[in-house]
Amino acid sequence: MHKTGTAWWQHGIVYQIYPRSFQDSDGDGIGDLPGIMGRLDHLVELGVDAVWLSPIFPSPMADFGYDVADFTGVDPIFGTQEQFDALVTEVHRRGLRLILDFVPNHTSDRHPWFEEARRSRDSAKRDWYIWRDPAPDGGPPNNWLSNFGGSAWEYDAATGQYYYHAFLKEQPDLNWRNPAVRAAMFDALRSWMARGVDGFRVDVIWHLIKDDQFRDNPVSPDWKPGMDPFHQLVPLYTADRPEVLDLVREMRAVIDEYDDRVLIGEIYLPLERLMAYYGADLTGAHMPFNFQLIDAPWHARTLEGLINEYEGGLPPGGWPNWVLGNHDKPRIASRVGPAQARVAVMLLLTLRGTPTFYYGDELGMENGLIRPDQVRDPFEKNVPGRGLGRDPQRTPMQWSAAPNAGFTTGQPWLPVSDSFSEVNVEAQSGDRRSMLSLCRALIALRRGEPALAAGAFEPVSAEGDLLVYQRIWGTDRFAVALNLGSTAARIALPERFADGRIHLSTHLDRSDALVGATVELRADEGVIIAPAKSAQVKP
Ligand code: NOJ
Ligand code: MG
Image 1 (tube, rainbow, N blue to C red):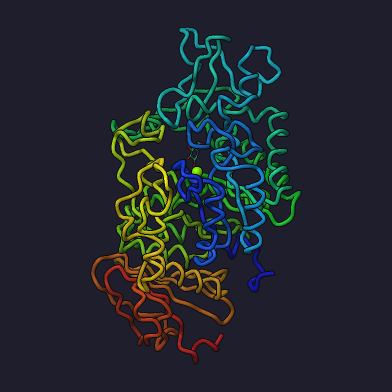
Image 2: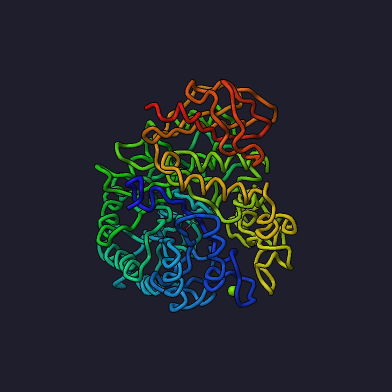
């Protein structure tokens, strides 16, 4: 049992690996499982607790693995079943956990289930997917849109019906109202847990059930030309349907058949709807992913508001979590700039709740530049030129100044960012002031201090560009003060921190410096402050 009495997924830190881009071992330019195996030292040195792998299952790769053709296998591009089992063993041997990406909303159109379903209207698997007759004019059955552009309905000439796909037409949606689909998919979860997998991040979990009356989605009043065309409609009837919460509860029950596993849900919804996914009496997802930091404008008052709303909106006992980046969103260092990226990781690692790191963010990797002929993301290909493409945040991990940043000896599937000669693990390991050194120091501190790993959160009022809060565990306390602005600013500290000392600065240059009743923060500086020893013993 951890000293805070919390589960591994509560006090731990999750690290997301996009397997295609982490480390290639066989020179095909695509990252793989043996590559990951050879880089576990990096994760241990960084100090994270759990690795989440984006999909590694057999796939035609229309959406780079989010189009699954076999829910219990491993794609040969990534390795073999044996290599997967060896990875699980090695990850556990190092005291880490392994989380897989479960993609239940859809399959590949090459999944044997779909191939069988499309064979005829009488196929035994027909109802495993969502089929509808054409509208009277022969067009799609309703106005539902695909997240990746155009109608969500694809006509199947052989059987004269349309099938629904919330994403690519190569990703037909499963019909989760069918009990046979539930049973088959739950068995897939069990098979991975039996092999030692510690939990799942569930892809678009809020999408699983669609309206059974197939009503048209309403037109959005907020959409303007040039915006993502998907947002022309409010997805009222295609996502976050009331019945989905029962399904999440069923999925959680399957997870609970095994000890100590975690269910994380990918959910982009407004706060009060997000909270519903914890389920009544916490019988839903352990952690509905909290993406507020990923999308929020980077202003102290905005962040303060959303942090307080999130803390205040959690159901009793619901465990918080925070995410700064993932394979679908622009890199944090590009969004807020390299100097603020350091403040951002201090925020991520000092808020209350499980932090999720996206690979490369520990180096401050920025979005890669992708020339038009290098575009691989189907989203960018379908809806070009609007900055929606996800290739920039998927460029290869930068290990060293060696060719291709040490990622591959072959031709990388996406270009290695030009920044790699300076921004890489080897160079930053040797630099006491680097982003990597900061992340290691923050993580080490968080691991060692119950107040930071699991303590209570208390906001401290502040103005302008300053964001200030305390973390509290028994008599232990830390104050965190972040300057989100580019000019120096002075803050008055809560009384008990007067004459305390700076534990850690984002600039990594004034640890142990004493503070008075106020402290001066430089531009883009964050500090973690411990009270004076005498103040600390007073409850
Ligand atoms: C969400 C995933 O994160 C994204 O990468 C994927 O394209 C869609 N779901 C469809 O599976
Ligand atoms: Mg490879």
